[in-house]
Length: 191
Image 1: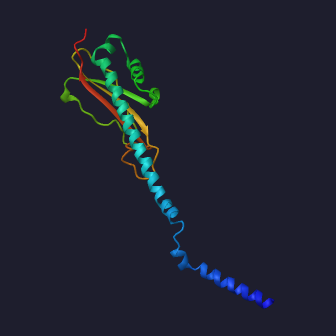
Image 2: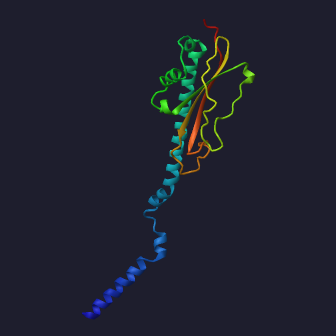
Image 3: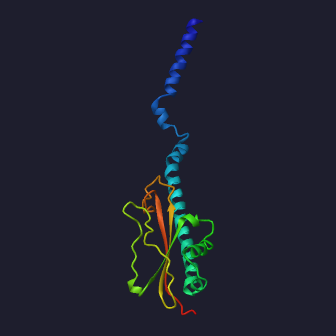
């Protein structure tokens, strides 16, 4: 009886060694789809989040462009000047045209400047050497009839997804992108 048990144990050990050999494991195909999916999942998700974030930045930029076009019309037609809008009330008019995508009161910066000619307009991004927004030269000067005016809206959009190198999306310190919308025009000859 003891001998039969020993032979049975030997037989099972040989079978286990034969089944657990590395060659057999390498030839086994079960679960390969799960392993391949696991290898592809991280780059796929990174690409999807990158595409969604880029699309969101472009959508936000287009929303800001629409807001500057709509609010600049108040200055173009003389409504802002005739109603006596100042920088704060003009910003409120801008915020009324931006719906839920931005933190308007504390996030959008408005710069309205008057120029003597279209050739005299120059633009340098208002980012200081540390990568922060420099608002020291911002003002509100809507001009009068026939004046050349530039209206600019600025917003610091946060870049959330940084798994892959999306440094081209971020152009400021703190992982933010400065969105700028500009409208340049000559005021109408309003009364």
